[in-house]
Image (cartoon, rainbow, N blue to C red):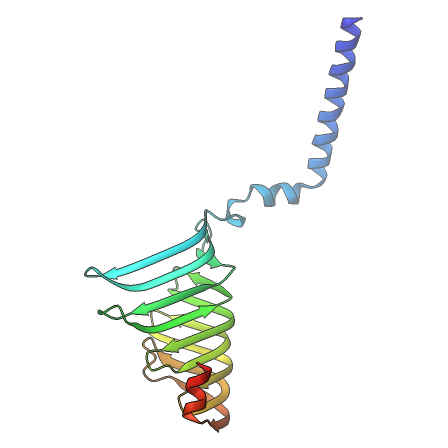
Length: 192
């Protein structure tokens, strides 16, 4: 009785193996995708905190709930799928600017950061730039967008399509202004 039971068990295992092999063979694209290292992150970090220093002084703080790096791709990148907050500091560790967005990709070789969805930039003077898309190009030393932008200063709000600035936000400007509104400075202070 034992030997017939073993024969039946072996037949069931062999049949299961054939079924598995056939099902994999029929869906070879899925198998290729699963085994393709380029489609998977080479690194993933939760509760990411990054500090950059220059001569012992912290100059940049970056915080993100999740970072994925795709380093095996031809054009490697880092993805911040849950957004990030980057704070830039001067030598006295006072905040000079702050950038936040709900989604960011850092293109490593191109030295570009692309921010999307609820992008907000605040400079040292308290001026605020809001847009849905922004590029920070480290090679060119520029920050820019080609989408709707709201630029809030202490006494005015400017609306328009696109903006550009240097990395320090010292010469930010709306490319195609569509609206300009003066605001009461006291009212502005109570909102911020």
